[in-house]
Image 1 (cartoon, rainbow, N blue to C red):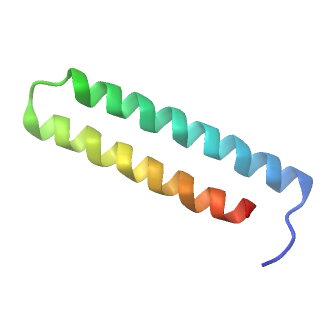
Image 2 (image 1 turned 90 degrees about the vertical axis):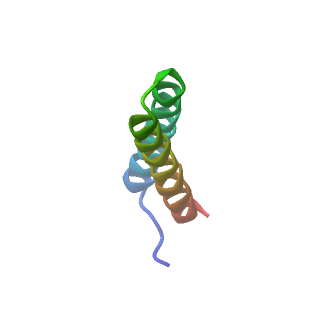
Length: 61
């Protein structure tokens, strides 16, 4: 893997934080839903955001 520049590292850190925030919000929205389909959609989107966050973290390691 290529070494990341300082700017690239900061951008990835920012994206990781953003995906964590989105995952938490989507999970919260799912908890508030009564419609099972929308609830599932929010949960799935939250999981997708968590997975993307983990992929981004892999670039840091």
